[in-house]
Image (cartoon, rainbow, N blue to C red; front, top):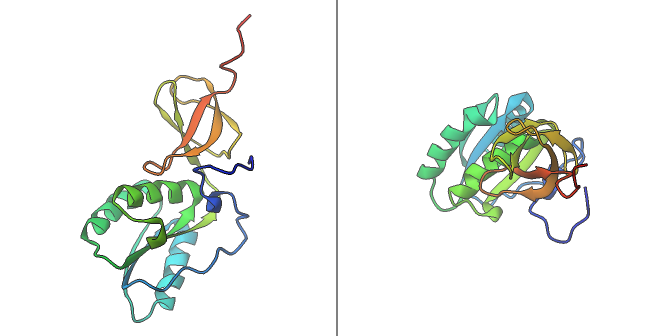
Length: 175
């Protein structure tokens, strides 16, 4: 990944999968714990055990889509002082972070701990189709909509959790 001073790609998307993230804060009045996949479920179980005495609500599922609707509903009921923790594959974490940000969750109320790699969503600027692919920044993937070879750019939408993708050879003149 290019080292850029300003990027919208969260640093937790590129850390070594085996590395331990910093410990989450314990300043919340209540906690909403979200896990995707088996490793995400395990993280939720560990967090819940460590948060004895706090009000805790857990949401778990096999993929981000299965959890996103429940997360949105839970956030609509959440009160000031709540903290949100998300664990799962990077792509799922980005998607669920987008749900949280869209609901008004601030960065200091949110803790994200990727449990592994997995497909990420890449939004094509040419046809507006989203392609799920095992990819990282600077990879090139075929668009599921228009078939163009998309460069996975170092920009992630905070609202949707999707990487920006554009035709990698758009500036080359066809012969």
